Length: 374
Image (cartoon, rainbow, N blue to C red; front, side, top):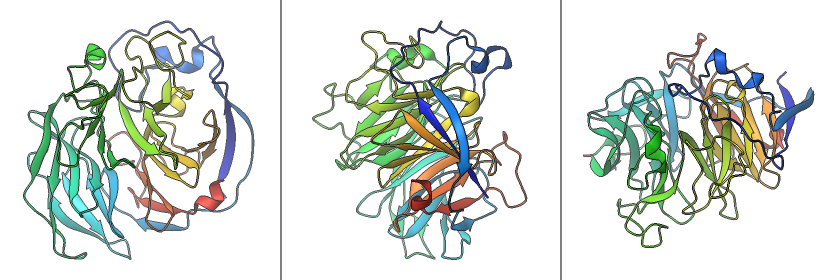
């Protein structure tokens, strides 16, 4: 039986933390010599006991995937990206995977490769991937019917996003305003996050055709928010509030509420700092407990997939400083959480990415009943 631990974040407590030094750590990694558990200031999320929680994953959707990174839906058909192979797969009702196509020019290395997927209202597929010249966003027509889908020719909407062996961001999603949002990492070059002329360390906002919307906060720029280190999850509540998850360096991972034009502090601050000019997260965690990647919203709850922490974290939108922790290592590393068309939440394991310990069926996609996690 899976267990749930409840955590309450003291987001009102302002923590003044010394800036960390050293090389940027890859996602899901914190140097042992700078463990957040050794900080003298208390973490704002503390466990308050455990109790049995109802329900198990309703179904194992698919098994045997290789470093899956993102899931998007073409109506009811799931499409999955594999980071290292550059393949896009479609899943049938029995969870069998079929190759739709391979994205040309994907340069896998470290955390780079084929990353986020999104589908627009016209059934076109968008993909964020690493190429020789940097990260890019491309659009593809999907030809044929489910069961025989094929990729059309790529149309590059945005390219030259700084790339590196780590900190590539990579999540893309359409917001409730119909615009395309993309997360980018600092590409291991910290000052780029504060440089509004750089596409690194940002959340970007584009029209579906890749143009800059007229109401973006910085005229003529796709930058929607900045001062990010490596954001990899974005989701919107029913009232339109935008949330983003972010990998920290050695001290704090973050859950942020995103507002246009705001500066989230990296590398000047990490986590809750209370410094003028920077927007603090609504919740923060030690990287060893979290390393949050993909995120979904369903019925007033945010579902955060955690890599190093190997937990599914649930955060109620009405109380974003609290959290429930689920599975606690039972599934290994979790890369993505996705709201499925039938109202369920899918979670994607990531144990074959070179940092996990894959089981015989990994990597897997599982389907959850949100009612069991409220």
